[in-house]
Length: 362
Image (cartoon, rainbow, N blue to C red):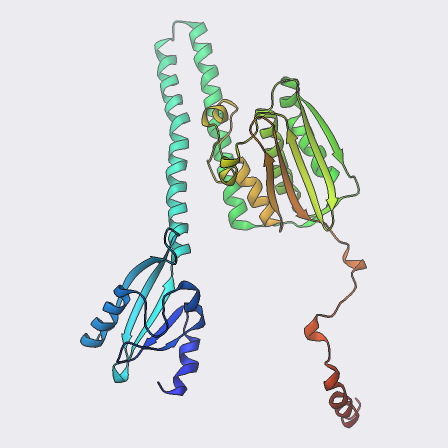
């Protein structure tokens, strides 16, 4: 292979493999190696080798979809493969990893299916209740009963739509108004918002908040996330129990934790609880008015602020959710520092000194 081709091959996007007339690898980009696509001299995949042969014999470029697991039982990588003939019967393969693209497509399809399913329940209930009201028009007590149920379903539908709008906003717009925010501004607003719900179930909220904490972000998003955690805690706690709200520094991180003493979350379920519409107990979640989007909203708010959300729980022992956010640092007290790349090597000092002496002063 001509040496002058190397810069061009290295500049091609994706994974690049050049195969010579004997089927040996003349060039493979460094990005190919982790995918285990090539051996010492040849392409490992028999499907890719057949594609190379077809292109060499036909003299025409071809493309195909291709997937394989790097090791047995592992998740399969998916590629979009282009093969083109070159002079001297060389064949150039370029592979584009589309695994993430396909995963996102699946997420979108699942999301649409889940939304349709979640909307179908309250809409169907409202339709049936409306028919029941018509049939019971001569019975005032039945009408009152059915209209109360209609209000509940309409509220559930409104809550679902609002949560969908909130999640869409969080995923699409990021942060709009970023300011230093006292942690007490957030916790006070949230406690006020959930106070009546907690009071109706005899639940006590114990707040242990470091009032010196300041975070940098968008107040409305942070209030939304913490309110979701607190509402979940109230909904899943036994009556006359206690919920703890804790905010403290942990190094350069602010940790805002909500701890309940409810049924807890089985360990096997914990990796999925931040997924949209995922519910550990669907019947219990619907009974408490949950949409299955609350924790997904919390996750996105934390990510928008450069943090994350964690959970510690065990079945029967309650749960503690913690929002971990970067602490606000006053820029006026920051001191500029040098990275290693900014430092002048000792061997370069004489040359730099001579250059400065030779250059005329301004």
